[in-house]
Image (cartoon, rainbow, N blue to C red):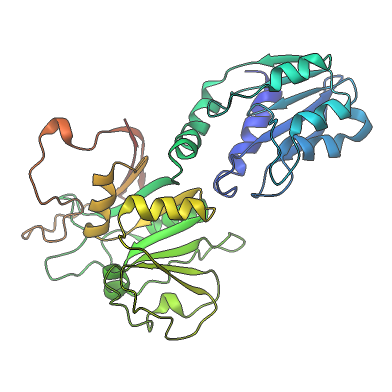
Length: 349
């Protein structure tokens, strides 16, 4: 791979998870073999990567080459089309690593008609990076990662509900890092009542994702920890029209849906600008998400413990016995050991 195109892809990866429903994009401007501009799309609604890189390069962009992780956009949104900026900057060549397969874009033709050489240099690394973004854009639901921490026999708690702590402190630190890479974290009312979590990112300098609670019946008292800090908003989804913000706190947003199904919640989150969702919940909510087939990434942390019992808190439960051809299918993408706990990252087939 061309090293400048690789740099552009790495810049995009650095911004993954913080651009909402927009793609993370990286860009590098090169002239006479020297990097003169760098850029990354950092936040939804802000300058795109190409614009940042060209602004940094200034006059040195004229006659140079711009490398981009995703083909430059041609549409007017919250910012003007990037192809316009590229033409105005006097760039002589554009190289990009992945086409936006969700758009029928005339970008190549626009650039070529302006006398600019265009090279689509397909890179597998970029394709992998944008796969979930493309799927989310087509379906209009966020990219979903489901995380569970379990014993070797797949239990999130003992039959009496004891769950703290199955996994070790090293796993907890890894989970905090993963939270920070997503726009929002979702959990269920049962987890809020049982564990009283804050669902914050307790790492200096990291952003705090929006916290989402699924409380269909409206059972929460609003006395729980999650409601009483101002670090980030709390969005509570419920089917109970009587639920009100009893504490009158500015950070609590109650969203009432006729049916709080996984699909309805995901569509509403996407419409509100949530592009990536991290699900941390008990067996009930985790099972709903797995059965919805909306989970792209499944992360399982296994502790070297065997809990036994009846399996009341087995992390995946269904009311009916499913045949093997109808069960959720995943493939192992990565595995590692974290302080004697095993992390297995799986991707939806």
